[in-house]
Length: 234
Image 1 (cartoon, rainbow, N blue to C red):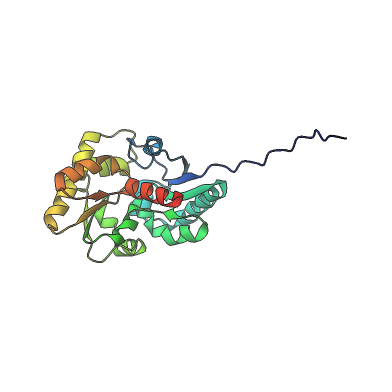
Image 2: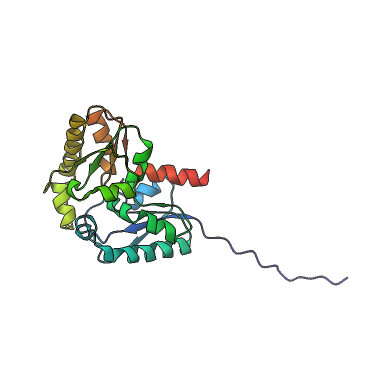
C-alpha cells in the first residue's frame, strides 16, 4: 500500500489581540499608571501597542483643539485595528471630541477618554487638566451628564505647565499635590458628589491619593480600560 509522507502545513496562528493606544507626541515623564507607560498594562497582563501621531502636542490637542489632527488619529486607529487591536484608546481625555469619528472608522471598540464613564455615575465630579478648555461640546461628545461638576488644575501649576511645555522632566511629588488639591476644591464645591472621574490620562498614578483625600470612589482611564478589556474577553 502506498503511503503519503507529505506533511500537512499547520494552519497560520492568528495574531494575539492587543490594546492599541493612540499617543500624543510627547516627552514628559510617565510613571506607572499613566496611559503611556507600558508597565500600566504589563502589570494587568494586557498586551499593548503604542502609535504616536506626529505633531499632536498637548497644547495643539487640549487648548487649540486643532481639527487638522482628526484624520491622522483616524488613520492611526485604522492601522491599529488592521494589525489586530481588539480595543483602542488614546493618551488624552480631550480626544473625546473624536469619539464618534474614531468609532465609525474601525470595527473594534474605541474608548477615547475616561469621560465616557461619567454617564453611568449618579453625581459625578470631574478633575480636568484644563477647565477652560473642557467645553460643553466636548462633554456632550462623551455623554457627560449636565449636572457634572468640573474642577481644573490650578492654571500654571507644575503638572499643567510642564505638560503644555512638553518638558522632559517634572516634579512628580508636586504633580500629585496639584491633582489632589484640585480634587479637594471639587469636593468642597459639591459635597453631594458620589464619584470623581480624572479626565487627564496622566492622573491615574495619583488616583489613590485623591481617594484618600476626598473619601470618594475615583475613576480614570486606567480603571475604564481594565474594565473594557475584561468585558471583551468575557
